[in-house]
Image (cartoon, rainbow, N blue to C red; front, side, top):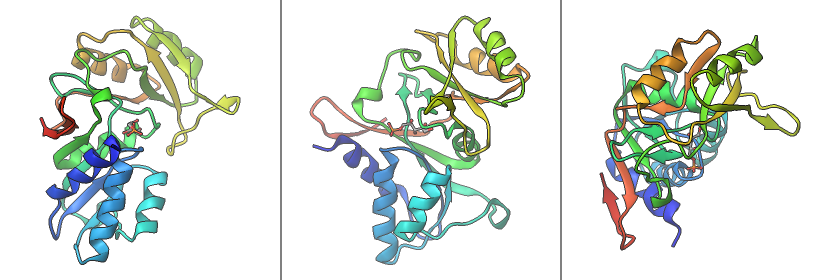
Length: 220
Ligand code: 5RP
C-alpha cells in the first residue's frame, strides 16, 4: 500500500468547483496535486496557489490553472504535508525547505488540511529537526542566538554549500529532542533578528488526514 498516495488523494474530496486551492510541497501532497490535475482535465474548475517553485512546476505540468495573490479575495482550502503532527494537530514543517511560503498560504486559507502518513504522527514534537529560515546576512550570529534557546542548530547544506530556499534564504535545522511549549518557541524564534520564519505551525491545522491502525483513512 502506498500510504502517501492514499492520504494525499483523499484530500481532493474537500475541493469543489470555484475554489482557490493552496498547493503544498512534498512527496505526500504530490499525490494530491496529481489527482487534482486529473480532476481538472475532467472538468473541475479550480485555481491553485503553489507554495514552492517545485510545486508550481508540477501544477503547471498536470494542468492546474495558477493564480496570483493580487487576483484573489481568499484561499478556500490549502493542502500540505508535514514532518511531524502532534496530538493537538500542531506541526513541524519545512523538511523540504518551503516552510515560509507554506505558512503564508496556510494562514491565508479558510481551511488548512494536512496529509500525513502514520509515521508523521507523534505524541510531542521535536524528534524531527525544526527548520528555521534565516536571512544569509549574519547567519552565524543568528545561529548562536538560536542555540541559546536550547537546541543544536545546523546550517542546512546542499552539495557542500548552504542550501538556499525559494526566497534566497538559508535554513538552520534545530535539534531540540522535545518541544514542550511549541507556541512559545515559535514566538521566541521569530523575535530573533535574522529569523524569517520557523517550521512550527501551532493551532493552524483544521483537518489532518492520516491512516488508523487498520490502515483505513482517518480524519482528525
Ligand atoms: C516542505 C514540507 C513538507 O510538507 C514536509 O517536509 C513533508 O514532506 P513529505 O510529504 O515529502 O514527507 O514541509 O517544506
